Length: 169
Image (tube, rainbow, N blue to C red; front, side, top):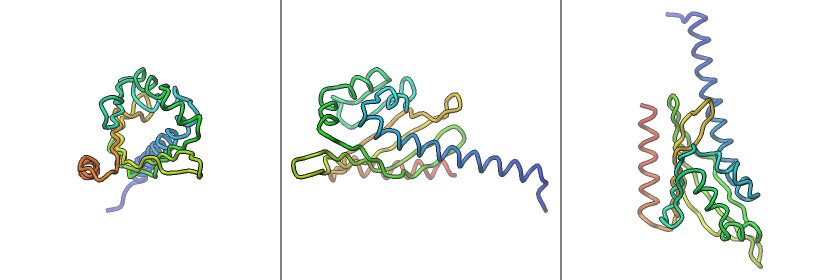
């Protein structure tokens, strides 16, 4: 049975929308590092919903909402990292999209300037949970775990891969 022109156009429109969403999500992840490294903190916070959560695995620094995200990124510790030279780099994430929700999984490296050059300060895995809000993808939650051999990091990767697969089913 051959598809009608309308069916083909609808399928093409759906596929193009999916690709556009994927590109927008890549842009969002790619924005984080330059935003925090240049202290463009409003831009960084805008990657989350107004009540979005940034769970870094340390209750002292976990954040909920733009105000807490801004406060943490404005802290002296972070400003000192930037003043001394640092780069928050993100890998190209795996992404699963279904309708108005998406999940991303990638690696995050923090390099800091040292007397001998640049060194890897921290390596972690990041899960991003997104929703499409007013035509724009924003994170409801980012969960971040150090890749230090802890079972929490492996579990985050395992669970995220399973959740991504369930979005496709």
